Structures are given as structure tokens and as C-alpha cells.
Amino acid sequence: MYYEKELETMPLDQLEALQTERLKKLASYCYERQPFYKKKFDELKVKPSDILSIKDIKKLPFTTKTDLRDNYPFNLLAVPKNSLAEIHASSGTTGKPTVVAYTTHDIKVWSTVMARAIVCAGGKPGDLVHNGYGYGLFTGGLGVHYGSLEGKFPITPVSSGGTKRQIMLIQDFQPRIITCTPSYSLYMAEEAKEMGIDPQSLSIEIGIFGAEPWTENMRKEIEAIWGIKALDIYGLSEIIGPGVAQECAGQDGLHIFADHFYPEIINPETGEEVKPGENGELVITTLTKEALPLIRYRTRDIVSMNYETCPHCGRTLPRISKVKGRTDDMLIIKGVNVFPSQIEEVLLKVEGVEPHYFIEVERLGSLDQMTVVVEVNEAIFSDEIKALEALEHKIKKEIESVLNIGVEVKLVEPKTIARSEGKAKRVVDKRVL
Ligand code: DLL
Image (cartoon, rainbow, N blue to C red; front, top):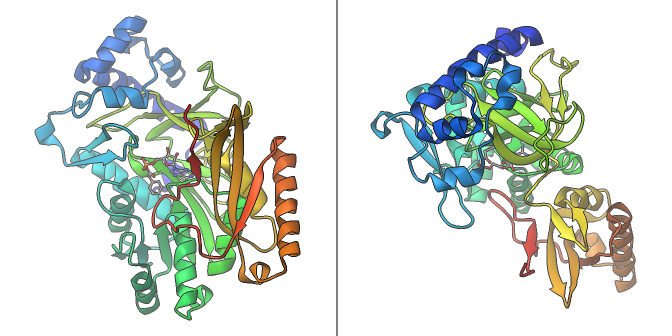
């Protein structure tokens, strides 16, 4: 099933022609309406008329999160503030947030790509959506909301939190689709069990999970606990929100809606494009946005790209891999690059370990010390100390063989690690760097 069949299945040469046409328009649009881009183009001595094909995108400048911060709040707008429809802001961990703005046209694009995403995940018009993404400045809640209205999926705008109440509503309303972060879905399942309800007995068949990294092993856990198909959705506020890319039931990469969001994968150090299949930083150009279009935005997310037509669903829209990490959440421990996802992948293979963990990094003297804190299930926890120690040792060895550095592992009692209703915090870095 497709939402916009022609656009989702067009031959790649036609897609490229559409991207070229849109990029040419975009280059002029940004040059004329965003002084920030005029300045950048002029510095690089590139003019909109130099853009003759999508391949010429390489002539254009990159845009970074810092550029957005420097232009806070409205200096990057391409339209007057009074013609906006909606303004969001992405949570800044330090300093000011970054502003995300939409015209009515942009909201329509967002609604459409989100409707595509729900259909791509297996949604059929009429399916009830239980939306557990937070509403507010975070784009998760409203993005799914607009897509549901557009695609004619009745929606319950539950937002995040009030977990026991969410379970009651799922039981009573019987939605087919649930949307929330993968970590929140685990928390919900746990609360359901506490209420004496088996999550598998509930009506949910499809989960559309994203907004944070999650591994294949995490997917298996979630699918088993809920008895559902768990599909990955990717997006970021600066580009539009959720609905940039979506997995189909083939679970082999996320179809990126490349008629609206042009993807490039680059080596984050050199800025050069990497080959299909190689890992690199995802860079996105918004081909159709009006309020705040971005050219070659550096997402910092690490993915690889697959341009083959999907054998499962027939979409030609290229596929990005699951996000493997972020250039800025890569930990450098004792000089070795470590992504939290590598640790998650190992942990969730071990029998008796629960999908709740975090990674603590400290500096002891001049040495980095990484401790993986993970919950074990009741059965293991009530075992003898010896058995616990043996498990700790086993996990330590397995992580060390993947990372090639020494780590500490600390097993903790079930339900002692804080649960997340949104994006889970996996790393506590106590080093003063
Ligand atoms: O998280 C938008 C979103 C909402 C996507 C709901 C999917 C579902 P931000 O808060 O701006 O926007 O955070 C964007 O979150 O650059 C990634 O690092 C991360 N992220 C988003 N989706 C995924 C995913 C929303 N499926 C940042 N896998 C992005 C891994 C993801 N990381």
C-alpha cells in the first residue's frame, strides 16, 4: 500500500529530474530570501544559476546547528513572521533552542509525508492510532497527529506520561497502531504487566517507533513483549519533524522521502560523499519547504544508503539504514570510538538481561573508566551471588571483545533504572573535558 504511489515508486531517473527542478527553485529562493544564504553563496562564489542538476548540490554550502543557533530566533526565516502557521523549537541542551517554523504549505507537506509514513508502516485508513509521542514544542506528537488526520487514521492524542492511563485507554479503545519512542513502549509494557495485563493480549499490531536510537536486538525485545511488528521512523525538527524516513514491513532500511528531503551521506571529517553502503553523516536539503528551508543540513546522524528498489514493498525511494550513532554522541574512551548502540547490541543478546541500561563515563586520574549499568530480571537477581558475578563477567568479556577496551559492568535490581516517557538518556558522562 502506498499513500502517493507515483511519487513513492517512480524510477530513479524521474526522481532525479524532480529533485533537480526543485533544487534549482530552492537555490534561487534561498538566495533571494535568506540573507544568510546569500552571504554564504557569495563567499563560495556560487550563483543560483550555477545549479543545473541535482549533482550540482555539491557546489552549495553546508548548514549546521550552530548556524541555526547564531540566527536565533528568526533571522533565517524566508517568509515574514506574520505569514507563519506554526513555530516549534528543538530542545537545546545548552543555551538557546533552535527555531523550527512552518507555513501552511509546510504543514501540508509534513502531514503528507507523515501520512505516507503511517501507510508505509502498514497502516490502513480507518486504523486507530494511539499517539504516545509528546505534544508541544517537540515535533513527535503533532507530526503524527497531522499525518493521521491527512491519511484518515482516527487518532487518540494521548501524548506522553500517565502510563497506566494509557494502558487503560489502549484496552478500551483498541487501537491497531501505537506511536511513541521505543524506550517508552518498553515502559508501557512493564506497567501493563504490573496491572495484570499481558501486552500481547492488547489490540496493537503495529508500533511506529523513533526519535531515539534503538538496535535490532531492542526491536526483537519490543516485538516479543508486545506481539507486534515494530517499525522505525526517523526525522528531526530542523528538517520537518518525524516523517523524513520510514521503514516498511520488510524492516531493511528506512525509505527516505527524497522528493522532499534530498539525502547525501558524507565523511564527517572531509565533507566528501561516501559510496552507497558506506557509513557516513546524513546531510539533508529540504527541497520543498517555504518558511525555513535548509541547504545541506548536517544532521550528525550516522547512516548508510541503499538505492536499490525495495524487494519488499516496491518503493524506489532510497533507504537509509537504522541510525548507527551520532557524530556527537560518539564516546572516545581511552582513545577508542564507542557508540552506545554497540553496547546495546551486546547487552540485549544476553539471557536474563533487561532492556534497561545506561553507560557512565568517569575520569579516574588520567584514565577514562566506562561502566555499563544494566538491570537483570527477577530470576537472575534472586540467584546466588556467584551466578550474578559470572553473568557480570560474561557481559564484561563480550563488550570488551567488541570494543577492544576494558569496561566495568554493574548489574542492578529490576526496575531500579529510571524509565523514560520520551527520549531515553543512555550516557552519563562525568568527565570534565
Ligand atoms: O525526534 C523527531 C521525531 C519524532 C522522529 C518522533 C521520529 C519520531 P528531534 O527532537 O529534533 O526530532 O531529534 C532529532 O533524534 O537527529 C536523531 O539523532 C534522533 N532520531 C530521530 N529519529 C530517530 C531514529 C525528533 N528513528 C534527532 N533512530 C535526530 C535514531 C533518531 N535516532
